[in-house]
Image (cartoon, rainbow over all chains, first blue to last red; front, side, top):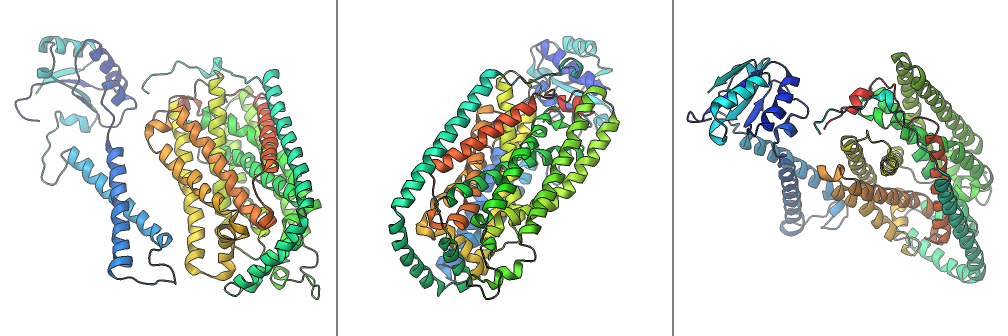
Length: 172
Length: 453
């Protein structure tokens, strides 16, 4: 949120109202940047029109990577580098390795996913985030509209927000 | 989906009509199955009668082979196989198939009750829209349980090694010390008591639940719901014990010498995931008929997740059972997998590989993405794969122990499964017509209608 951005914030005090307001505001051809709420609202992400998260794809890739790493490590150590007979099985004893491969897959997926999620949301130690309105952590619902990304004039946007039930309209 | 549904439960009492056309189609399938079965039995009687000499000649060679193998393995376990072969008669294959299908479809029927009970016990909301479908399944117990009882009573010695004549009598040539040691549990009377007793409890509890459920449609209120929670809880406690006990009784005791502590879980997992697949197919069929419009992709998504998760759960249990035995390498335990992998001229090896592909790999890949779990065609594909795979799973549990090298896939197998499947569909369709497809006074119905994931 750089200081040059020009936001208009509609503040609502009811989750149903903000959900309906999203549809009403979009119907006026206004592009919504984001909606901030103290708790998740069912259907809000679909109403705003956010693209679906691509985290599952990342999860699959991390899982595959974990599987490959686990299998490579164990086959390198147990077959090529220092062949060992364990329990009278072959050197390449795949069934023995499945639990380790499973653990490797899960470990890579979990760590990879948390890291990806934090990175894509700018969540890292020392990062100070200033909320657009502190009350979104309490009991207010805030719809943020980026004026620069909209063709509609600021005055019109403010009017639409007021009409859609916003209890106050601020700029930031 | 965000949309607010304008569906009101009061105006949508929906009934499935089991049309004359539908009945006719299922009866045709039943007759086709019977014909295939009859033809298969005829060919079997001819084939075995003609090839008997050859089979006998081969018998000694196989026995010699077993003895050679016995030097590596334990003598006791191998003698079990030889024992099974001595009793072989070509009709055994018919009874083995009846048993296989009766066990398989009993599982699908009873897990319908388990699913509904679980929803009540956990007070789940989402499933209120579709609980009438699994609720109808246990009706088939009225057919499959008597079949199990009759086959056990009259042909039990074909299926179970421990019922062979003289295995528990000291001094008899068939005397088997290991089986004699298990006879306190594995004997005809106690087996029947368990089968009839738990079977009756299943049916009684289902009837109680069903009655309350139908009553709820008329009067509503939360009292009936609380009562159903209690019935469901009682059933889950009973099913927790009886599903394991029946896994030992009906399937594990076929290979009497062998045992596995994972077996109850393993068989339950197989039944469980199959039932989810059947529920999904039933709901999609009804949706294709234009019914159950209130079951949307969110509910299907949850059912898809169940199919996906329990396919993995089955794989986990199946593989853990294998891994422990493989790792410990005790001859009396490994014989079970050796028999399926290399025994009996390797006739079971293909099924064993196919099973893992159908039950784990394909559902895992097909149902992995969110979109697949919300798309009917992918759900249908996965459901068919899972049902086929778990039929093969039960085939692998039962056939090697009962038939040994005489097993195989033929008209008898195909005919028998068609007969049972069409009977199952007929009975369940009939039961579905008896109640509205939506439990309109279910206290969680509004929640279920707004289900959004």
